Image (cartoon, rainbow, N blue to C red):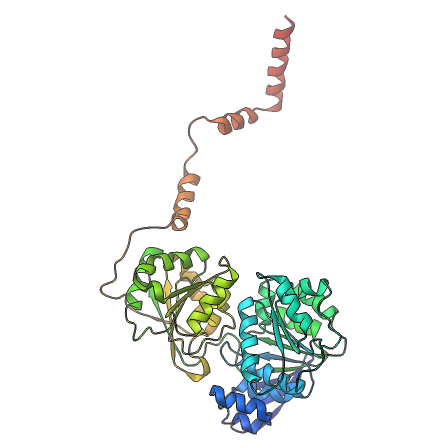
Length: 462
């Protein structure tokens, strides 16, 4: 093991089980101009207000520019997108040919749009083309954009294969493949599509994997897709919440009371100035918008998979531009969505997968800012919340419910299911009906049935 000090960064490099691992324990004070970045990209960064690189950016740049395969592990909200885009765009230099030279695979359409926006920001003073393709919209329009020519192609796995099979995408010039949000791609079951994509990419290329966590499945994925002895850059222990997030929770008995609590908190517009509300189900997201729409109809956006493509993109755009104050979303928005200055993340439902909690609260306190994460915990969700506390090795503060909160006795249908099942299991069904008559008939022993049939036959003969 080798310990080094560089620009205020304490890190170590070691080789184990085929990995060259670079782990950064704290960030330095370097500026982007210290990283040998091209003048055009520096101008774009300065105009956008970026001054200092994050640890993942600082340590990923030289590895990517060296041409080695790499996996980058860093918290949500630490700038993984720019960590691969800046060195990638520097390698491309300028627009060239008609076929893509870099391919970026992401799990959702929202991330396709966001990565394309980041490319647009960084290439303001460069001549490079970027096309994004994703499902849920007109495939012919996207095929025409690809056919016109691009340098960077950003795609969801399914739509990439659809357009490739139509003979529109040519991969012969692809030199770099980025698999972003790799853990999310695995969660969504995209491994078969990823294998198909990597099979049609030239054998000689650089592969970059970026993920917020490093699980056994990501390890397996990296060993399959990356060259032997890739470099792994890890800036923080996995499943660690963003440093500047204040976390607290409320014990709330049911969904109706959760809605009352949410309404009460959101009334303070000065404090809750830009809020993301996460739900486990699309039904609860729609309930929130329905119940709060009378109060803040013009301030609400909703984002989940049942919404039409244009509706989802417009909702996200309105929230990012500050035209709406509250974005209600299912977990589809928890990964990779970069919205600046989110003051609060509210977990209306506790996620069933503990790691999702870390990704959700990473939507606030981005780029070193302060933020607050609030969780509404019902009795049924208590085991989930305890699993989250165990994962992050923290006990989250339990706050007292506001004095003026209305505690509701109303239970939604899904909250009644468990009670209904218990009653059904304890009581034997009564009465007749076709189903019960058929069951009683079928419960007779085979011998008895045969005897009855024999007697019936004898009566007929007489």
